[in-house]
Length: 289
Image 1: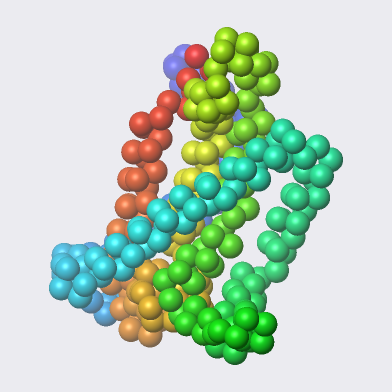
Image 2: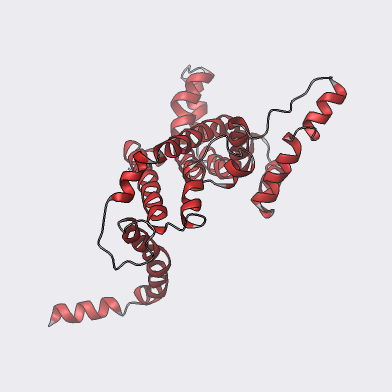
């Protein structure tokens, strides 16, 4: 009887009562669609009901229909995007955290301002820049006398779009991570005779790893599931997995195949993120233990 009273009192706690509606909303709006996707992925192709005998035919089509190529391109472009964004954003983030002072607010506003504009509109702006006889090509022809007409609808154009769109998602976590590094530790390392490179490698980089990890995971997951960049800037140069998912759900009207590709994409990204988080002890780096 005492155990039952404890359970009832636990349920009636204010925190539990307040979290109840949010928990139900997450179950209905997040977990529910994932369960439905998983169920549809085992249904026969072009089926619109879950009341069918399950099959693995959709998963076999990953090989027979060469969907593995789309997964490869998505993974490759996501990794390249994360690497380029780290190289681009780390110096800027270091300046924002340690050097710029008041000007860091201006840089933050300039970086965040494009987020108020639709991603598709910004990407079509790049189309006007990279288009044959467009802004870049026309300027180069007029000033220098040579053409740059082959830039659009290429893999580098897709990478450019990914880096441009997801730059804030790497920059801001990096800035927070770098700001967590105490200046006293760097000064102590210099006093002990460490070089600038040693201070960066042994002090700044490890202690800013939480920001690096968060920014890398955010940009990787977003780039892995990106769609607009490959369609608008890449044309048919490569087909990313999100494009195949959209085609399966819309033009092909093959919900089971689209669900199967979605489940594989979610599982792949979740597995990679889980492996990364297991290999790096964020609690030790942050200093919780």
